[in-house]
Image (tube, rainbow over all chains, first blue to last red; front, side):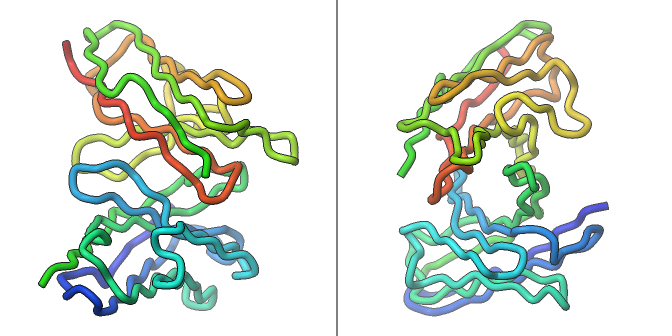
Length: 118
Length: 112
């Protein structure tokens, strides 16, 4: 069974940093591209970042470019999101999701909440 | 960036009825590889989004045939027939042809 479990969220002050993790199991992690998607309270879905299976290709949304860094450790089956210079508008539930070979995000974690507030 | 315009915002339905949701993109979603990477999700209250349809018209594993997708280029539709209580929630389209990847703003399916 495919499982994605996010961790590392919490309450953080504006301008500070936070690192999210996503532990994958039930599939060969190193064969799949991975993504972070977020959802502000009561709002829709926003794609944040993508990383290819070997980390060769990385893409970011303009809203986080230069502040967030996506990375992965295939030996640990873990996806990361390093978030710096956090803003109130980064407050959201952050999901990690696997990218199916046919293009969509086929499996999602349960999400981890990040709240940026003083 | 590709803008995904999803309509309607809210969709009242009677159980057993049929509904359609539209998703239009600001540019063609046909990739240089010839595929169209337009997908549909359902987010039930308090849950993570779940994949329903991928690449326009392919049902994901375990998705009942009451759900069907169609369209091409910039104009796409999700149809749900014989609506059941478990179908209620917010539906999103997603394009993964062009970076940045973009979602529609969502359609809330609710009981009439």
